[in-house]
Every structure is written in structure tokens, then in C-alpha cells.
Amino acid sequence: MVAVPIVVGAWLGQKLDESAGTAPWGLLGLTFLGMAIAGLGVAYMVRRYLAENPIGPVSDQARRAGRSWQAEIDESERKREAGEEE
Image (cartoon, rainbow, N blue to C red; front, side):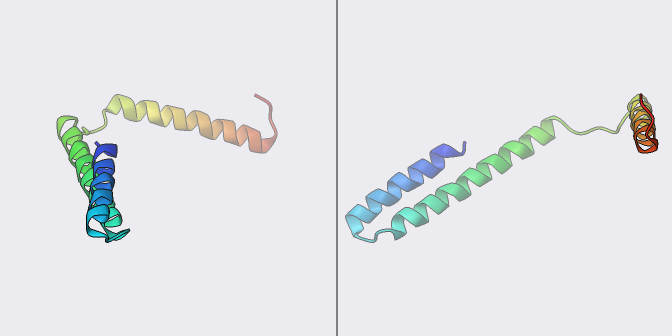
């Protein structure tokens, strides 16, 4: 998805430069075009993934677990700052 458009763009740019004598502009231009195409391909994949896997609202159980975990961290930090051993 990423490498193929860039490599093909570079290869075509090299061939264009060899035939037209425009070095290095064909190589650079078509490599950058390949990078843009690769970026669009990745953006399409991310968009499709997010559409298939929507992020739902957090459950109450997850919120409680997060609060409990944060309370444990806060207590551990309080003990560490007070010089208490666990």
C-alpha cells in the first residue's frame, strides 16, 4: 500500500529522465506523486477501518475500573511522596 506506489513512481521517473534527459526532475516528481498516492491509500484504509470499527461510548464498568485504577495510582504516589514503603 505504501511502498509500491513510491517504487513505481521512482522507476517511472528514472525511465522518464533517461528518455527525456530531464534528470532529476522526473524522478523527484513521480516519486512525490507516488508518495501522495500512498498517503491517500493509507487514509482510505484508516477511514474504512474506522467505519467498520466505530468507537462506542465507554461503559459504566470501564469507568469504574478506570477510577479504581487511578485511585490506586494516586495512593501509590501519595505513599512514595510521604516516604512510606508499600
